[in-house]
Image (cartoon, rainbow over all chains, first blue to last red; front, top):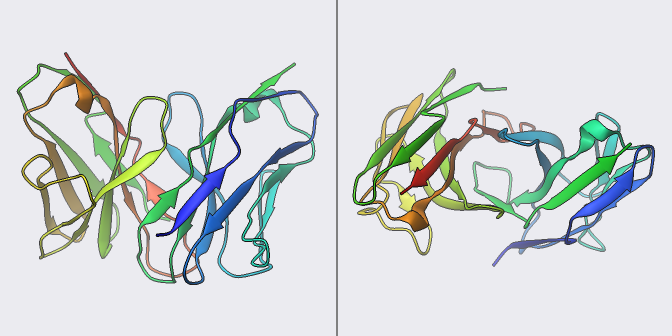
Length: 113
Length: 115
């Protein structure tokens, strides 16, 4: 079945460092891909998304490009801030309808001053 | 995007009892999804709820343990029945508003502790 694999955390970075969180997926069709963020004590928020190959999702300085050839959707940010400390989840949804989300295990990011 | 009001936000319950979690959406949506997030873990889908039909449960989840109601297009409840400490988790509802370009929206979650 469909699945999402994320790099294991925690990831610890200094402020202003470059961030990459790897995400690869397995799907039988053409899924939509998402990154969600969960700040401490809060619910899930959509960070960015991409619905087809070569699409780039971006938000709040974060970017991810839908790479069909490598089945990847890596999250990047050029300069992280302490306020980016959170758990990041990569997820996919099969097809364009109202299908369920399948989540990766989540990657905890800790940014220190 | 849709706004979801989920309650209660947290509860501490005795084992053997049941808790009903409510989600109210500010717009009509076809499907609502219920997830469980065990401590330190990712999200696992419990079931998908369509208005006017039986919910569809994922492997490992059964209706007797997690009955779901979906009386209209803006509301759903999930009941956690006959609770044990292993049910201690965050439970979240989710919707995907109409339109392919939309992302899924989540409620703020219900943090359940069973003692």
